[in-house]
Length: 275
Ligand SMILES: O=P(O)(O)O[C@@H]1C[C@H](O)[C@@H](CO)O1
Ligand SMILES: Nc1nc2[nH]cnc2c(=O)[nH]1
Figure (cartoon, protein in one colour):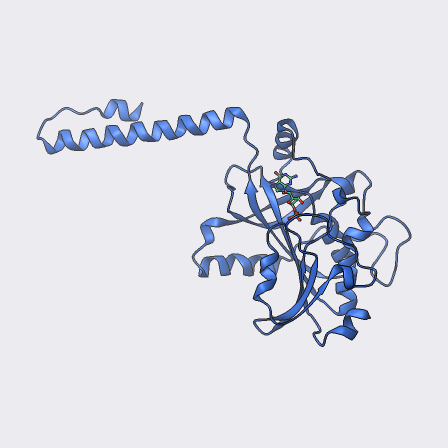
């Protein structure tokens, strides 16, 4: 009610900006911005890179609200608090939630700088009983036992891939499974390997609880992870080096063969190339 009394904007889309992604809010026109400290009952950001502002504005003809800074379990917030803004968005009239995060890659084809469109998630805290929907269910938001089999809207995922192609950045974008862990420590090598074997492509410390609450209250969800790092077991560093070296040798041999042929000589070192 306080927010609705402070701004004329009536957002249809909410965007939660992940670590280092707060500048997404700068794209909004005709902004009304509120510090979390000024919003009655709102939790407070404690993490560097999370400015702690709710920014309303227009983006390509849609009214949006952006969270510049989200809340994480490792800050000491209860899961109810970390996901509280999602219910605020629902009450503001939002229909679509876009979640973004910084995440570590566990997949061979995902490198730092790539974008992963989230196709599904593994909510490790949730599997262990740490769920924002714990406690009495509030039926005005959603059912006691909500389905989570299609959390990430297939139409929006498809649209995002099409836009990536149109903008010529498709090679940086792929779909994958995000896993949420509690943090704040990063994974041990054994934990990273375990998650990789379980089918996880990227790991982070947020997002899944927000998505659970959003799906519970009927919001359409789209999620992306910005890949910021990749856990590097020693063996894979060695294998990458070995592959790079092999590629160099093949290139050198190919060049040598080309110059031998250019000189009119009939011999070559092709057997070395193939081995
Ligand atoms: O809010 P997100 O999920 O982007 O933040 C990630 C997880 C930690 O807060 C932080 C670690 O780098 O980035
Ligand atoms: N848990 C986890 N969170 C991250 N956020 C950004 N990178 C990582 C990572 O490698 N692991």
